[in-house]
Length: 231
Image (cartoon, rainbow, N blue to C red):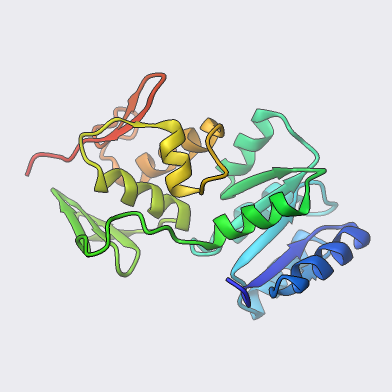
């Protein structure tokens, strides 16, 4: 992951300076922006592998910036915020964030979150199928793309990883903690609100009737299961 390009978006010059120095020392290529508007301008002209985005900024604001950045489904977004309420985390995840880190945070925690956001887990055994095919749903593991009835659906990196893991373990109830650790990484396990948001997003994209899901089924108080449709 060394050499990955990271964009820091924060209106506090000292925070940008400290994070630039710290991340550069880890081998990352780092740029920064003072506002959501400046971040979008940089993203139009440069390629980045990850965005670290503050919520409390003047002008556009972090949530609006997150929604605009998420127009590109392939770039991971980590929110950094002093807000720590569950509703704030859910709003950020709904806006397209992949992860949420509350300020103040330790640098080791942030580095672990960055590694988790940049990594694509080996979610199925080596030598497993390159394409998972169900009635109307096809998941191409090699290209990290999914289609429904022949039409591609735009999935973020974590949405794809979550769908792939669920579909690789059909008709099995997978507990929340196991899902979080498989998709986000070993440092996760309690962030159940992440799963609620991401499962809802997936249902909107792949279920014929998202309000009455048949593919990704909630197992109350336990986790989720993937129920392959009959062919």
